[in-house]
Image 1 (cartoon, helix red, strand yellow):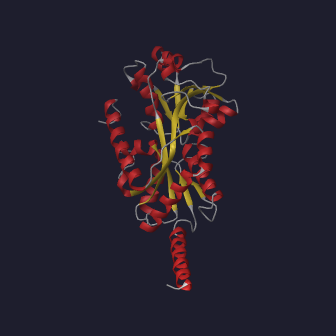
Image 2: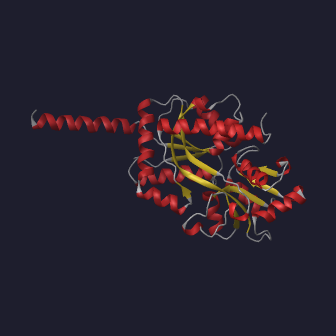
Image 3: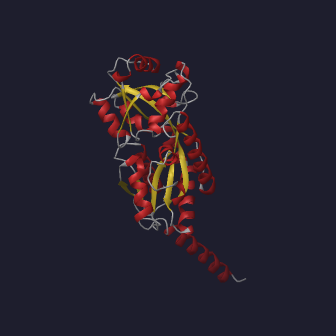
Length: 325
C-alpha cells in the first residue's frame, strides 16, 4: 500500500468519526426536568460546561428547564414530541426511576427512552435552616414522633418520589411505625424546596449533597444527616451520617441521562462515548469531589440494566411502605 493510500484511509477514518460525533453535538441540548437550582439542573449545566471545556461538544449545551410532575412533563415531552432528536439528552436520577417504578408518569414506561450513562451518585441529606434549634436527626425524628403535624419536610420530588422515600426510610429505621404520618411537601426542584425552608414555610429539607452544598456554603442551611454508609471526605467530612446517630438509613441518588427512544444508534453511541470520556477525565473527578458525588461508572447497556434493576427495587420498597399497592 502506498503512503498516499495509507494517508487516505486514515483521513477517511477521521472523517467517519467526526461525522458520528457530529450527530450528537450539532445543537446539543439538555433538558433539566425541574426549575433552576436543583439536582437535575446541576447535572445538565455542570455536564454541559465540562463537556465543552474538554472539547467533547463543539457548541455550548443549551439547558432547558421543564418542570412538572416530578419529571413527568419532561418525559412526556421527549416521548411524544422529541422522540427522534439526536441532539437531546435529559438529566435523570433515582428520582426518575422512582416515578417510573410507581407508574407516576401516566402512559409512560422506562422502555420508551434510551438510557445513556451515569455520571456519579449523590448521597441524600436531611437539613434544617441554619437558625433552627434542631441539631441532630434523632431530635427531628423525635419531634415527628411526638407531634407529626409540627414538622413539614420539603423536597424537590413529588409525593412518593425519591426525596420523599429517603425521609420515610429514615423514619422507618428510627422506629416510626406509620411512616404515612410524616408530613412531606413536594416542590419542583431542590432549589425551590430550600427557598421554602428559608422562608419558614417548612421545618426541614430532604435532597442530595450536590443540591445542598451551595446553601451550606452560604450559611443558609445546616445538614443534620448524610444518608451515606460513612462520612464523606474533604469539605463534607464535618457532616454527620444518619448511621452514626443511630439511624441506619442509606440513600444514594444516581445521576445520569436518558435520550429519546427514536435516537439513531450512531447518535446514541456517540453520546455514550462522550459521557464516558467525560466521566474518565480528571476534570470530572474534581467536579465529583467538589460536590460530594460518589463513583458510579456505567454506560450504554450496563446503565440500561442498572436502571431496570433500580426501577424493580424501588417498586418493591414502595409496595412495602404502602405508597403503591
